[in-house]
Image 1 (cartoon, rainbow, N blue to C red):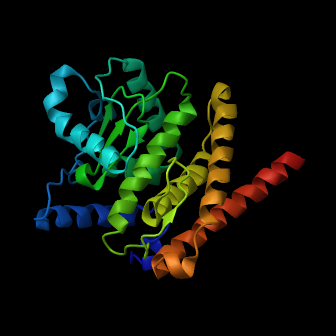
Image 2 (cartoon, rainbow, N blue to C red; image 1 turned 135 degrees about the vertical axis):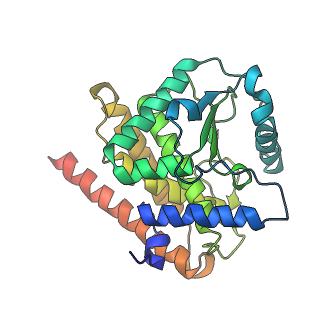
Amino acid sequence: MTITKRDIFSIYLNREVVEQECTLWRQFVACNKKQTILNFLTENHAYAPWPEKVVCYQAANRDDYQAVLKSVAAEMQRQNEKFSAIHYSAMNSYRENILAAIELLSTNSAVMDYTLRNLIGRVVVVSCDSLVATSSVLFLGLIVISPKEDWTLSDYVENIIHEMSHIELYIKQLLDPLVSTGTYLKSPFRDQPRPANGVFHAAFVLTRIIFYMRNLTFPGAHKQSAAVNINKASLSLQETLAQFDHKNCLTAQGSSIAEEMCLVLSQFQKEDAASAII
């Protein structure tokens, strides 16, 4: 199957695209001489069971993740964000909830299952008041997540989609920057204005959240919270997309993705309005 630019620069998951993206990232890491990059992407389809990939940060594995967590703290400080200390997590229930969220996503869609297995090599559960979840090009394929007591299943699902989408978009940007200016815009996830690239990332993950969560069948007790989360994402996406002047802020490929974002948002709003009438 021939992969087109339209396939690559899209918000829609594509198995062949993900496979090529993983190959591209490994090549980039092998050639990189500028900075230390840790690669956590799954190697050559050697899939470890999810219970082995989702771990709680504890004294026993501190050395395995200390460099990653120091990088997280340093990046937050660089962005002038308030950041509290990262602590060990003994909350195995949080880990079990993450596994349940991944199971729900994986059983709903074969391409989602393939994407998660290849793009996420490790999920590290920590305790940190000011952190929700994060990923980075410096440790691509690893998600650091700090669940909160009031999270429902939909919150876990949302954050897995969110960080997986960041990871994939980082790789896409090896081929095209997508954003052509350093203009600062309002971010839906931060109190302070962020560079346009960060806000584009936010719009990308919000679109993914809307598109893939609305097709999930949540257990009865979680349907309402899922609907609330999707509606919040749609409002944030609408506000975020309104800031972009495609001709000035985005490259041609970035504009192509933005058009898909607008299409997903418009379709969701139409379906939401129709369900409200019914």
